Image 1 (tube, one colour):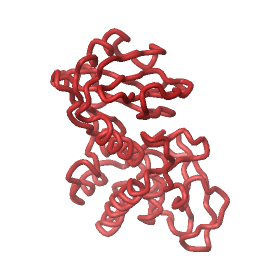
Image 2 (cartoon, one colour; image 1 turned 180 degrees about the vertical axis):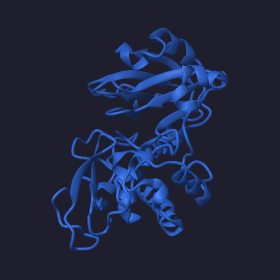
Image 3 (cartoon, helix red, strand yellow; image 1 turned 60 degrees about the vertical axis):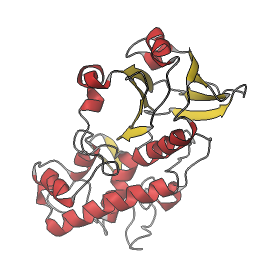
Image 4 (cartoon, helix red, strand yellow; image 1 turned 30 degrees about the vertical axis):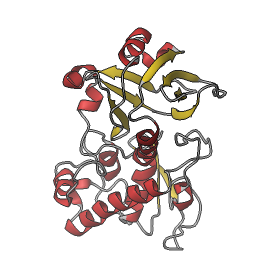
Length: 283
């Protein structure tokens, strides 16, 4: 699933290619991608509107419209947002098309159809999009002081990885970046959050910011399935910088002594180095 760096990369592409454009027509293929409302609601809500901004909260793309409504796009497992010239050959699994006033199109492509495109009223978001309304702090889009993280870790006895994956606490971090962040901070994924001291909290805070920013700078991570790409169809390259994620059984390139282990945490595959990330009190 694309995480904060990948979605931020897409947002920046939409800021350049979509903002200020009028939506002249809308096509909806598989209705599953508009399941929260309907095909007609998306077509009626977008046709004739102008897109004012491209925003992001966690893993959600949010685009205010001049009608007062907003468009939400969630990529989930396999979604892509592409911008191309009108008349270009569309990829398979193109389920939503926005025809724009400059002879370009925005395509929402999603082979697994877990993603969504929705038009909603921001004033009614708690009812129409509760998952967005309940998002926690965004460590890139929001002010994210270290004290806020200190409060979060002290408030729970859960493991650090489940805490990082909880979108109602910190929005945007998923499996890849949780593993990379915890490795950078030298903390085990199953370490109880309320047992880390001020120094470890400083390391964790710095790792969250530094890893996410570094990934954004190179367009995010495109894994072996090549499903994540930016709006021009280009892959990211942060996967070349991964130190633990997807490297089970390999020598740790940080310490040169440990072997990367794979366990399961919060129901997710989890990767860590037992030398760099020594055991502490576990959840």
